[in-house]
Amino acid sequence: MTRILIIASGGGHTGFARAIAQYLPEKVDFVIPTNDTYSRQMISQYANKIYEIPKGREPDESSLVLFKRLLSIIVKSANIKKYDLIIATGSNHSIFPSFFQYLKGGKVYGIESQDRLITKGKAIGIISNYAKGVFLHWQDQRKLYEKKGIVVGPIVEKPKYESKDEGYILVTTGSMGFKRLFDAIVKSVIGKRIVMQTGKIDPTIYRNQNVTTFSFDPDLEKWIANASLVITHQGKTAMEAVVMYRKPVIMVYNNDWKSATTLSDAKKYAEILGATFLSDPITWSDYNVLLEAIENANEPNVFDTGTPNLVKHVLSEL
Image (cartoon, rainbow, N blue to C red):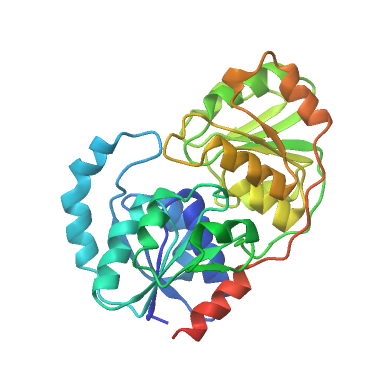
């Protein structure tokens, strides 16, 4: 099915891309960030062809970085052949490839982030100007895109495992990691088994008898499925843990994500999921904030998966 191009823009955005690919009847083509080995691992089995285009900047990088990479991004985006239908999963990485496909006559759709309830994501807000539609996870997001919003339900993958409780707390905060949170957990959560995915932060500094650590596991889902509790940030994993495996979730807001979701968005996102919300660890009076949240974590809300609805809409457009 070479008529479809999915722009898998790293991290949770690539998670959206893989979720969609799992429900499509055939392999499709993808764009990923240059040298993003995690994204390549995640989508390679679903891909006919994979293009690489530099990512403008990461959430913790300044806008100046984008200008240094801009020429390469434009040239490589413009050189991708025309596709009939394009799905932009979000982040600045999705803008130029989707825009050049629009100029070539392709139908562009965007995916708004699951944690945008009050403010639009900057990248998808731009893409929505030329997109035919924007896929949304929640009815609460419809007000953000009154004319182009298409509510399909939470966009998650097909669960690979049964939900079990093997007695550990899973801590995972995406590819960038969240050192303040990791430090707080290792110092304060005593006597409990912890499994921690640290992303770009060195996992060895947290490893001990009760703490299992690793930088990245392409099968993080296995760890989610078997956890007693998931502690994460305002990203996609919170939705996956709740929707796919009905796990209690503690969502800890990361102030460093300056270009990501706002505090108000994150609070609303946690409310929709039925997750326990905590502000950034730098605001805590002491570690009892975390310990009380662990002892009194909320039961998650129940949802139907929305990915089949998205795929049905996409196939009807071809």
